[in-house]
Image 1 (cartoon, rainbow, N blue to C red):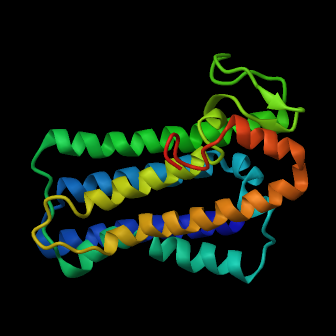
Image 2 (tube, rainbow, N blue to C red; image 1 turned 180 degrees about the vertical axis):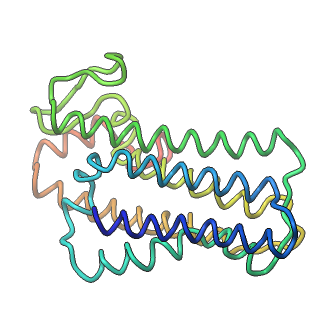
Length: 234
C-alpha cells in the first residue's frame, strides 16, 4: 500500500498544480475545475482512509509487487488519472457549467459510483473478516454459496459491481472537463475509457481464476448473479 500512498500524494499535488496554473493564467477558477478537484481529492482521501479494505482487492490478491505495480502506482496513476484537468489547464480551455441542475447531476453520478464501489468493497472486506456479520446497519444479511462466495447486497447486483462504480466516477470527472467547454477536447475521456478496457479484460481473467478455484460453486454463483459488471445489461 505504500506505493499507492506515494502515488496518490503525487496525484493530489498534480491536481493542485494544474488548478493553480489555470488560476495563474486566467485569474479565476471555473466551477468545473473547483468541483473536479474537490471530487478527486475526496476520492483519494477516502481511498487512503479505507486502505485496509484494499488488501483484499485484485491488485494485491492476484498480482505480485513488481515493475508493473510500481510503475503503475508511481507514474501511471498520478499522471494519467488527472488527464482531464491537465488537458484543460495546459490548453487553457474555458469551461463553466452554466446550469446548476447539470452540475448537480454530474456530482450525483459521481456519488452513485462511489456508493457502488465503496459499498461493494467494504461489504467484501466485512465478509472476509467477519463472515457471519450483517452489513450496512444490519440491513443486509450475508448470503453465500457454501460459505465461499458472497451473493447478497451489492454482490447480488453483478459479479463486479465495484467496477461499475469506479467507471461511473471516472465518467463524472470526464464530464466536468467536457460540458460547456468553449473548445472540446476528448482527452478527459481517456480516463474512463481506460477503466472500461481494463475492467472488461480483468473480469474475463478473474472469471477464469474463479472457475479453477471454486469449480461448481462458481458455476452456481454465475447462475445466481448472471450479470458480469452492469446489472441487466452485461
